[in-house]
Amino acid sequence: MKSRAALLFQQPGKWEITEIDVGPPRQGELLVRMVASGLCHSDDHIATGDMPFTGALPLAGGHEGAGIVEEVGPHTEGFEVGDHVVLPFLPACGKCRWCSSGMQNLCDSGARTLSGARADGSLRLSLDGTPIGQMAGISTFSEYTALSVHSAVKISPDIDLVAACLTSCGVSTGWGAAVNSAEVRPGDVIIVVGIGGIGINAVQGAAQAGARVLIAVDPVEWKRTRAHEFGATHAVATIEEATEIARAHTNGQGADAAIVCVGVTNGTHIGSAFSSIRKAGTCVVVGLGNIMSDGSVPLSLHELVLFQKRLQGSLFGACSPVRDIPALLDLYRAGKLRLDELITNRYTLEQINDGFADMHAGRNLRGVITFG
Image 1: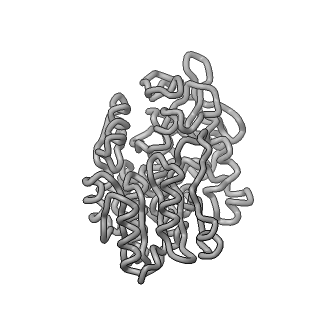
Image 2: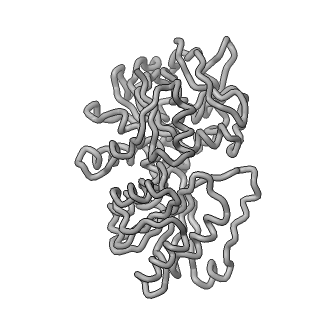
Image 3: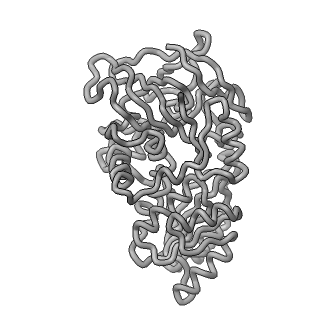
Protein backbone atom coordinates (compact mmCIF):
# COMPACT_ATOMS: atom_id res chain seq x y z
CA MET A 1 0.00 0.00 0.00
CA LYS A 2 1.22 3.50 -0.85
CA SER A 3 1.36 6.03 1.98
CA ARG A 4 2.60 9.57 2.44
CA ALA A 5 5.00 9.77 5.36
CA ALA A 6 7.46 12.16 7.01
CA LEU A 7 10.97 10.76 6.60
CA LEU A 8 14.30 11.77 8.09
CA PHE A 9 17.19 11.18 5.68
CA GLN A 10 20.03 12.44 7.87
CA GLN A 11 20.91 13.51 11.41
CA PRO A 12 20.61 16.39 12.02
CA GLY A 13 17.92 17.00 9.43
CA LYS A 14 14.37 18.07 8.63
CA TRP A 15 11.35 15.88 8.04
CA GLU A 16 10.58 15.36 4.35
CA ILE A 17 7.21 14.21 2.99
CA THR A 18 7.72 11.18 0.75
CA GLU A 19 5.55 8.39 -0.64
CA ILE A 20 6.49 5.01 0.80
CA ASP A 21 5.23 1.45 0.60
CA VAL A 22 3.62 -0.25 3.59
CA GLY A 23 3.75 -4.04 3.62
CA PRO A 24 0.61 -6.11 4.29
CA PRO A 25 0.13 -7.24 7.90
CA ARG A 26 1.53 -10.63 8.79
CA GLN A 27 0.37 -12.89 11.60
CA GLY A 28 0.31 -10.85 14.78
CA GLU A 29 0.20 -7.56 12.89
CA LEU A 30 -2.28 -4.83 11.96
CA LEU A 31 -2.54 -2.33 9.14
CA VAL A 32 -3.72 0.95 10.67
CA ARG A 33 -5.00 4.11 9.02
CA MET A 34 -3.70 6.98 11.11
CA VAL A 35 -6.12 9.64 12.32
CA ALA A 36 -3.79 11.75 14.46
CA SER A 37 -0.19 11.94 15.61
CA GLY A 38 1.28 14.10 18.34
CA LEU A 39 4.45 16.13 17.85
CA CYS A 40 6.65 15.01 20.72
CA HIS A 41 10.15 16.12 21.64
CA SER A 42 11.50 12.57 21.27
CA ASP A 43 11.07 12.68 17.48
CA ASP A 44 12.76 16.07 17.54
CA HIS A 45 15.66 14.57 19.50
CA ILE A 46 16.08 12.16 16.57
CA ALA A 47 15.95 15.00 14.03
CA THR A 48 18.50 17.15 15.89
CA GLY A 49 20.81 14.21 16.51
CA ASP A 50 20.57 14.47 20.31
CA MET A 51 19.29 10.90 20.26
CA PRO A 52 21.28 8.86 17.73
CA PHE A 53 19.20 6.53 15.59
CA THR A 54 20.88 3.12 15.65
CA GLY A 55 19.37 1.83 12.41
CA ALA A 56 19.91 2.82 8.81
CA LEU A 57 18.30 6.02 7.55
CA PRO A 58 15.87 7.05 6.18
CA LEU A 59 13.49 6.73 9.08
CA ALA A 60 9.70 7.15 8.98
CA GLY A 61 9.05 9.13 12.16
CA GLY A 62 6.29 9.44 14.72
CA HIS A 63 5.71 7.56 17.96
CA GLU A 64 2.52 9.10 19.41
CA GLY A 65 -0.69 8.37 17.56
CA ALA A 66 -4.08 6.76 17.14
CA GLY A 67 -6.00 5.34 14.21
CA ILE A 68 -8.39 2.74 12.83
CA VAL A 69 -7.58 -0.85 11.93
CA GLU A 70 -7.83 -1.35 8.15
CA GLU A 71 -6.62 -4.94 7.96
CA VAL A 72 -5.81 -7.72 10.43
CA GLY A 73 -3.02 -10.18 9.75
CA PRO A 74 -3.89 -13.86 9.22
CA HIS A 75 -4.54 -15.96 12.34
CA THR A 76 -4.41 -12.84 14.51
CA GLU A 77 -6.89 -12.78 17.36
CA GLY A 78 -8.21 -9.89 19.45
CA PHE A 79 -8.66 -7.27 16.72
CA GLU A 80 -11.13 -6.61 13.93
CA VAL A 81 -11.29 -4.25 10.98
CA GLY A 82 -12.72 -0.95 12.21
CA ASP A 83 -11.28 -1.18 15.72
CA HIS A 84 -10.04 2.11 17.15
CA VAL A 85 -6.52 1.84 18.52
CA VAL A 86 -3.98 3.93 20.39
CA LEU A 87 -0.36 3.14 19.51
CA PRO A 88 1.95 3.32 22.55
CA PHE A 89 5.57 3.90 21.57
CA LEU A 90 6.67 1.00 23.75
CA PRO A 91 5.36 -2.48 22.86
CA ALA A 92 4.08 -4.86 25.53
CA CYS A 93 4.49 -8.57 24.79
CA GLY A 94 2.65 -9.60 27.95
CA LYS A 95 5.04 -12.50 28.56
CA CYS A 96 8.49 -11.25 29.55
CA ARG A 97 9.63 -10.74 33.15
CA TRP A 98 8.74 -7.04 33.10
CA CYS A 99 5.27 -7.40 31.61
CA SER A 100 4.57 -10.24 34.04
CA SER A 101 5.64 -7.95 36.88
CA GLY A 102 3.24 -5.18 35.85
CA MET A 103 5.99 -3.06 34.28
CA GLN A 104 5.02 -3.15 30.62
CA ASN A 105 6.98 0.06 29.99
CA LEU A 106 10.15 -2.00 30.47
CA CYS A 107 9.07 -4.84 28.15
CA ASP A 108 12.01 -6.63 26.53
CA SER A 109 10.39 -5.97 23.14
CA GLY A 110 11.27 -2.30 23.54
CA ALA A 111 14.97 -3.00 23.03
CA ARG A 112 14.70 -2.14 19.32
CA THR A 113 12.70 1.07 19.78
CA LEU A 114 15.47 3.20 18.25
CA SER A 115 16.66 0.66 15.69
CA GLY A 116 13.79 1.14 13.24
CA ALA A 117 13.02 -2.57 13.32
CA ARG A 118 10.52 -4.84 15.05
CA ALA A 119 11.41 -7.02 18.00
CA ASP A 120 12.14 -9.79 15.46
CA GLY A 121 14.43 -7.51 13.45
CA SER A 122 12.09 -7.15 10.47
CA LEU A 123 11.37 -3.93 8.55
CA ARG A 124 7.83 -3.38 7.28
CA LEU A 125 8.13 -0.09 5.39
CA SER A 126 10.08 0.58 2.20
CA LEU A 127 11.08 3.37 -0.17
CA ASP A 128 11.64 2.50 -3.83
CA GLY A 129 12.00 -1.15 -2.87
CA THR A 130 14.53 -0.56 -0.08
CA PRO A 131 13.45 -1.23 3.54
CA ILE A 132 13.44 1.85 5.80
CA GLY A 133 13.34 2.40 9.53
CA GLN A 134 10.09 2.64 11.47
CA MET A 135 10.17 4.86 14.55
CA ALA A 136 9.29 2.80 17.64
CA GLY A 137 7.88 0.16 15.30
CA ILE A 138 4.81 2.31 14.59
CA SER A 139 5.75 5.41 12.49
CA THR A 140 2.74 7.56 13.25
CA PHE A 141 3.91 10.23 10.78
CA SER A 142 2.58 8.00 8.00
CA GLU A 143 -0.97 7.88 6.62
CA TYR A 144 -0.90 4.08 6.92
CA THR A 145 1.34 1.91 9.02
CA ALA A 146 1.85 -1.79 9.72
CA LEU A 147 2.59 -2.69 13.30
CA SER A 148 2.67 -5.49 15.84
CA VAL A 149 -0.41 -6.12 17.97
CA HIS A 150 1.97 -5.57 20.91
CA SER A 151 2.02 -1.89 19.87
CA ALA A 152 -1.74 -1.39 19.76
CA VAL A 153 -4.26 -0.81 22.53
CA LYS A 154 -7.90 -1.13 21.53
CA ILE A 155 -10.15 1.64 22.85
CA SER A 156 -13.84 2.47 22.83
CA PRO A 157 -15.03 3.88 19.47
CA ASP A 158 -16.88 6.73 21.20
CA ILE A 159 -13.62 8.42 22.22
CA ASP A 160 -12.19 11.10 19.94
CA LEU A 161 -9.05 9.64 18.36
CA VAL A 162 -7.34 13.03 18.10
CA ALA A 163 -7.53 13.43 21.87
CA ALA A 164 -6.81 9.75 22.49
CA CYS A 165 -3.55 9.85 20.53
CA LEU A 166 -1.97 11.94 23.28
CA THR A 167 -2.18 9.02 25.72
CA SER A 168 0.25 6.98 23.63
CA CYS A 169 3.16 9.07 24.93
CA GLY A 170 2.83 12.58 26.37
CA VAL A 171 -0.12 12.24 28.70
CA SER A 172 0.83 8.83 30.06
CA THR A 173 4.46 9.87 30.51
CA GLY A 174 3.72 13.10 32.37
CA TRP A 175 0.73 11.90 34.37
CA GLY A 176 2.53 8.68 35.31
CA ALA A 177 5.70 10.55 36.31
CA ALA A 178 3.66 12.24 39.03
CA VAL A 179 1.29 9.45 40.04
CA ASN A 180 3.55 6.41 39.60
CA SER A 181 7.18 7.59 39.75
CA ALA A 182 6.92 10.49 42.21
CA GLU A 183 4.10 8.73 44.09
CA VAL A 184 2.38 12.05 44.82
CA ARG A 185 0.03 11.83 47.78
CA PRO A 186 -2.66 14.16 49.14
CA GLY A 187 -1.08 17.15 50.87
CA ASP A 188 2.28 16.92 49.07
CA VAL A 189 4.34 19.87 47.88
CA ILE A 190 5.43 19.23 44.30
CA ILE A 191 7.65 21.04 41.77
CA VAL A 192 7.36 20.35 38.03
CA VAL A 193 10.18 21.75 35.90
CA GLY A 194 9.40 22.28 32.21
CA ILE A 195 5.78 22.80 31.18
CA GLY A 196 5.62 21.31 27.71
CA GLY A 197 3.68 18.32 26.44
CA ILE A 198 5.04 16.13 29.25
CA GLY A 199 5.31 18.60 32.11
CA ILE A 200 1.76 19.93 31.76
CA ASN A 201 0.53 16.37 32.31
CA ALA A 202 2.80 15.94 35.31
CA VAL A 203 1.04 19.02 36.69
CA GLN A 204 -2.31 17.46 35.84
CA GLY A 205 -1.38 14.14 37.46
CA ALA A 206 0.01 15.74 40.61
CA ALA A 207 -3.12 17.86 40.99
CA GLN A 208 -5.35 14.79 40.63
CA ALA A 209 -3.25 12.93 43.20
CA GLY A 210 -3.96 15.68 45.74
CA ALA A 211 -0.87 17.91 45.78
CA ARG A 212 -1.43 20.74 48.25
CA VAL A 213 1.18 23.06 46.73
CA LEU A 214 2.02 22.52 43.07
CA ILE A 215 4.71 24.74 41.58
CA ALA A 216 5.19 24.86 37.81
CA VAL A 217 8.53 26.11 36.47
CA ASP A 218 8.99 27.43 32.94
CA PRO A 219 10.65 30.52 31.44
CA VAL A 220 7.73 31.02 29.02
CA GLU A 221 5.00 33.14 30.64
CA TRP A 222 2.21 31.68 28.48
CA LYS A 223 3.06 28.18 29.70
CA ARG A 224 3.03 29.35 33.29
CA THR A 225 -0.45 30.75 32.74
CA ARG A 226 -1.62 27.47 31.23
CA ALA A 227 -0.16 25.52 34.15
CA HIS A 228 -2.64 27.21 36.49
CA GLU A 229 -5.48 25.91 34.30
CA PHE A 230 -4.23 22.35 34.82
CA GLY A 231 -3.95 22.59 38.61
CA ALA A 232 -0.76 24.46 39.50
CA THR A 233 -1.04 26.65 42.59
CA HIS A 234 2.10 28.61 41.68
CA ALA A 235 3.98 29.19 38.44
CA VAL A 236 7.45 30.74 38.29
CA ALA A 237 10.27 31.18 35.80
CA THR A 238 13.14 29.52 37.70
CA ILE A 239 13.81 26.51 39.92
CA GLU A 240 15.32 28.86 42.50
CA GLU A 241 11.98 30.65 42.89
CA ALA A 242 10.18 27.31 43.10
CA THR A 243 12.56 26.06 45.79
CA GLU A 244 11.90 29.12 47.92
CA ILE A 245 8.14 28.63 47.64
CA ALA A 246 8.43 24.93 48.50
CA ARG A 247 10.53 25.66 51.57
CA ALA A 248 8.15 28.42 52.66
CA HIS A 249 5.34 25.83 52.76
CA THR A 250 7.36 23.08 54.49
CA ASN A 251 9.11 24.84 57.39
CA GLY A 252 12.26 25.05 55.30
CA GLN A 253 12.37 21.39 54.33
CA GLY A 254 11.74 21.53 50.58
CA ALA A 255 9.41 19.80 48.12
CA ASP A 256 8.24 16.23 48.57
CA ALA A 257 9.12 15.62 44.92
CA ALA A 258 10.51 17.49 41.92
CA ILE A 259 9.73 16.23 38.43
CA VAL A 260 12.10 17.28 35.64
CA CYS A 261 10.38 17.46 32.24
CA VAL A 262 12.64 19.92 30.41
CA GLY A 263 12.63 19.31 26.65
CA VAL A 264 16.43 19.16 26.45
CA THR A 265 17.44 18.13 29.96
CA ASN A 266 20.97 18.56 31.23
CA GLY A 267 22.77 17.81 34.48
CA THR A 268 22.21 21.29 35.88
CA HIS A 269 18.43 20.88 35.63
CA ILE A 270 18.64 17.61 37.56
CA GLY A 271 21.08 18.89 40.18
CA SER A 272 18.94 21.96 40.91
CA ALA A 273 15.78 19.89 41.19
CA PHE A 274 17.54 17.40 43.46
CA SER A 275 18.55 20.24 45.78
CA SER A 276 14.96 21.50 45.96
CA ILE A 277 13.53 18.37 47.64
CA ARG A 278 13.32 17.55 51.33
CA LYS A 279 14.90 14.71 53.26
CA ALA A 280 13.64 11.37 51.84
CA GLY A 281 12.21 13.29 48.89
CA THR A 282 12.21 12.14 45.28
CA CYS A 283 13.62 13.78 42.16
CA VAL A 284 12.03 12.23 39.07
CA VAL A 285 13.83 12.67 35.74
CA VAL A 286 11.66 12.39 32.62
CA GLY A 287 13.35 14.66 30.07
CA LEU A 288 16.19 13.61 27.80
CA GLY A 289 19.11 15.61 26.46
CA ASN A 290 22.00 14.83 24.16
CA ILE A 291 22.67 11.14 24.74
CA MET A 292 26.22 11.56 23.44
CA SER A 293 27.11 14.08 26.18
CA ASP A 294 28.89 12.87 29.31
CA GLY A 295 25.64 13.16 31.26
CA SER A 296 27.36 14.54 34.36
CA VAL A 297 25.00 15.67 37.11
CA PRO A 298 26.23 18.05 39.85
CA LEU A 299 24.81 16.00 42.70
CA SER A 300 25.65 16.32 46.39
CA LEU A 301 26.69 12.91 47.69
CA HIS A 302 26.11 14.32 51.18
CA GLU A 303 22.48 15.10 50.36
CA LEU A 304 21.96 11.80 48.58
CA VAL A 305 23.17 9.63 51.47
CA LEU A 306 22.63 11.61 54.66
CA PHE A 307 19.29 13.07 53.57
CA GLN A 308 18.21 9.75 52.06
CA LYS A 309 17.04 11.42 48.85
CA ARG A 310 15.99 9.40 45.83
CA LEU A 311 16.87 10.06 42.18
CA GLN A 312 14.31 8.23 40.02
CA GLY A 313 14.24 7.78 36.26
CA SER A 314 10.81 7.53 34.65
CA LEU A 315 10.14 5.84 31.29
CA PHE A 316 6.61 6.29 29.91
CA GLY A 317 5.61 7.44 33.38
CA ALA A 318 6.13 3.88 34.68
CA CYS A 319 2.79 3.10 33.02
CA SER A 320 1.65 -0.24 31.64
CA PRO A 321 -0.04 0.80 28.37
CA VAL A 322 -2.58 -2.04 28.14
CA ARG A 323 -3.85 -1.13 31.62
CA ASP A 324 -3.25 2.59 31.90
CA ILE A 325 -4.26 3.97 28.49
CA PRO A 326 -7.88 2.75 28.84
CA ALA A 327 -7.90 3.97 32.46
CA LEU A 328 -6.76 7.45 31.42
CA LEU A 329 -9.36 7.57 28.67
CA ASP A 330 -12.02 6.60 31.21
CA LEU A 331 -10.94 9.63 33.25
CA TYR A 332 -11.19 11.73 30.09
CA ARG A 333 -14.70 10.45 29.38
CA ALA A 334 -15.69 11.27 32.97
CA GLY A 335 -14.41 14.84 32.57
CA LYS A 336 -11.56 14.32 35.04
CA LEU A 337 -8.63 14.37 32.60
CA ARG A 338 -8.00 17.25 30.20
CA LEU A 339 -6.97 16.13 26.73
CA ASP A 340 -8.69 18.51 24.30
CA GLU A 341 -7.24 21.48 26.17
CA LEU A 342 -3.71 20.16 25.60
CA ILE A 343 -3.97 20.53 21.83
CA THR A 344 -2.67 23.99 21.02
CA ASN A 345 -2.43 23.71 17.23
CA ARG A 346 -3.31 21.19 14.54
CA TYR A 347 -1.17 20.66 11.45
CA THR A 348 -1.29 18.76 8.19
CA LEU A 349 1.48 16.27 7.52
CA GLU A 350 3.08 18.79 5.15
CA GLN A 351 3.28 21.30 8.03
CA ILE A 352 5.24 18.99 10.33
CA ASN A 353 8.38 21.15 10.42
CA ASP A 354 6.23 24.20 11.23
CA GLY A 355 4.79 22.25 14.15
CA PHE A 356 8.22 21.43 15.55
CA ALA A 357 9.28 25.06 15.05
CA ASP A 358 6.28 26.13 17.14
CA MET A 359 7.32 23.62 19.80
CA HIS A 360 10.82 25.10 19.94
CA ALA A 361 9.37 28.61 20.14
CA GLY A 362 7.24 27.65 23.16
CA ARG A 363 3.96 28.16 21.32
CA ASN A 364 2.57 24.65 21.90
CA LEU A 365 1.62 22.48 24.80
CA ARG A 366 1.02 19.82 22.18
CA GLY A 367 0.85 20.16 18.43
CA VAL A 368 -1.03 17.42 16.60
CA ILE A 369 -0.94 16.23 13.00
CA THR A 370 -4.37 15.27 11.75
CA PHE A 371 -4.76 13.13 8.66
CA GLY A 372 -7.55 14.02 6.21
